[in-house]
Image (cartoon, rainbow, N blue to C red):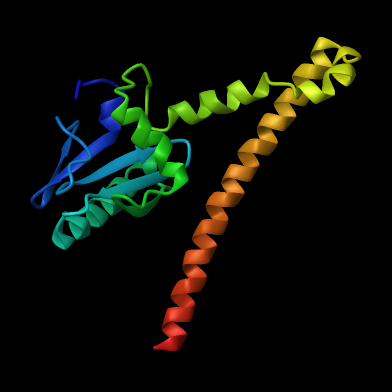
Length: 173
């Protein structure tokens, strides 16, 4: 993997320490910390054959990263290989596609939202012809904001579901 601004947000667990800007990523026996600036989240990606000890070390390092001023309010989440949530898949795809043109993991989400802004439903063609360009721009901006809110709500609902499951597990034991 090339050393770029993008890779400075990626760490690999190596024993009891971490290595910034690792040469390889997403190895099945590896554990990686990936900083997602857009979601204020530190992803801990654990390969299917990774050791529990390394996942524990990764969570410790995530806590250390959170103590730094620029990551102070970040949360962290462990992601297992093959069970990556949709919000992580954009990063996974960026890395697998070698998107060194991006500045940080998850930046491609921003471009997807901007691309959606410029789309107008063809069924609304007659309505869109009667709108000025600034009105169309405002509407597309609002639609993009709504799309982003839906993504955040979906992400939150996923985490609420996990918490409810934990409560149920505790109550059933």
